[in-house]
Amino acid sequence: MEDTKPLQPPTRIAWEQFFATQARVMALRSTCTRLSVGCVVVRDKRMIASGYNGSIAGDVHCTDVGCRIVDGHCVRAIHAEQNALLQCAKFGVSTDGADLYVTHLPCLNCTKSLIQAGVARVFYEKSYRPDPYAKELLEFAGVEVIQVDSSMNSLCENFMEAQ
Picture 1 (cartoon, rainbow, N blue to C red):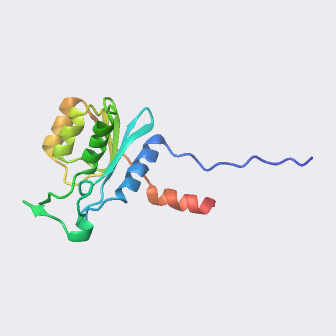
Picture 2: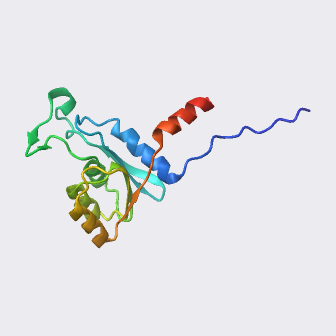
Picture 3: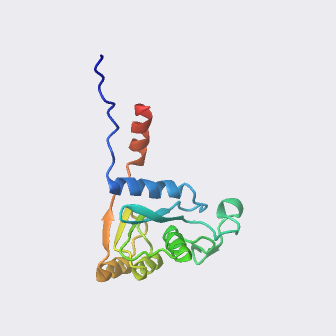
């Protein structure tokens, strides 16, 4: 009888890296031509919702007809964090105590929404137009903010090498 070595599985990535990567994948669905943002809401190490920035369901997309700019902002797009939180509301899923993984640091309005929704921690990969008042509100509400690295590019390369 021949001895065989068990196959060595690839190194498992940490939960934070896994969910940050999921947010990056969600950003690939974005229909915003200015910035692609993705978000996942996680509770008990399970994704309970996801979102990306783009038009409301059924409307035309910025990628098809261009942005609708008012006061320097595209008013056609809804933010990834809002989409994910509203998905929870639509399906009756509580976000109290949840973690939110997002590709970019949330804006002021998204910050207020996630605080009101009871999000406990925000994990973000990149800082984009950080708002001092948003930072102040997060600290006041006791929401932990943690920068993470999805390492998505190296993860894809490692996966392809293992195949």
